[in-house]
Image (tube, rainbow, N blue to C red; front, side, top):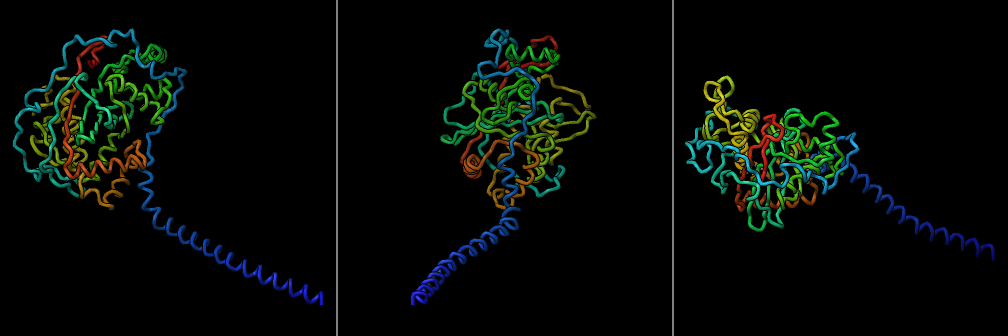
Length: 414
């Protein structure tokens, strides 16, 4: 009797255990099946969609490696004994462009866009009425960066991918619904610290024409000295941001965009060309008319010619301009402000357009954006597309100096 009772007890225990195991097995199998299905969906459906966006959201500029032992901090940026440090400029101001490119001059009659070369991609809509003020010249001391505003550093590099050919700051004032597009002279003289100057001398590049200009700062911060990577984890860009905050008090950089010439052309191509209003005819060095005065539809190569045009040639190919780099900076400022209205539109913010654009930008553009900042700027972009913002363009004007007697064309900010 006792044996039968024990046997029944064991049988009941097994049944109870089996009844508890079965739901556990069912749950485990269900979870495994769900994971398998989600994995298939992720790798076959979501990943091809998310990859471009994830790449775009994590695409910082690659930092270089410096062999220098010179380490600088924020308090070691400038040489206080430099003759141009904290000294009120007394030299002749840089000449401004003639009245033909004066932002206050009467706009010239536009030409038919269809008469100019057409891009290979889908054409962008012709710009309509929008509140954009033509670029004006100001001194650095007149440039105000209000608290609570955002500052985005826009950098365009030359064909050698070493020096900044273009340096802009986009100041966004969300409260006032204003944007300031500020062109900073690439020729700005930087009174580097004694340690930096000594390292330049040790490397035998101290006397290289232009090495003390602002456009060489990223190269110096990346390869000549060791500026501790800070906010952007890039020694050259962090060094540039620190220098700018010294030259332009109140200018603290929040994000950056960093593009090469080929990347610039990719961007123009993906948006299908741009409409640009040229202040006058632009000729090549052989006297060929490249861009007509007035409204033009430019493809990527033509747009690059426009923003790099500096000599101001006549129909015979002769240089008629002696106004330093100011005229080109003026054209670049107006160019960026004008194409902003064509790029940031409701039509360009569709899902397919964004994915296509991100695919190109991933290969052409480095930046500091993350998910949070992208969400913020998308909100700004929507307001911009709804024409809630007024854009003001400025070109900072310095004083022509020749600190080394090499006629390299330095500009001193006040």
